[in-house]
Image (tube, rainbow, N blue to C red; front, side):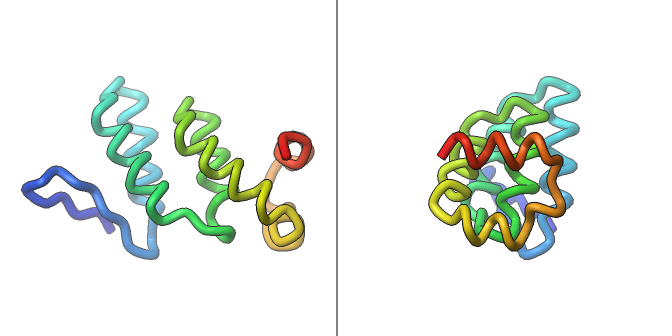
Length: 101
């Protein structure tokens, strides 16, 4: 879930779908600061098992910092990515991610 402390920081636990939804909503209503905070929060929790989902969301929303962070992780672990998550992503995206390496 999402918590917001007095500092204004957003943190996520293992269930990040709320933050992804919040980020989509922030983009829809052009809430740039909220979108940036969601992006920072997701970057802090990125790992090989969720980076494809984060990458595709970032691409859809124009969240370039998150997208680039995920792309670097995918490039570093392309074999792991191919085996773990290729079936969850559009084929053209898989090819493009691997070619960016």
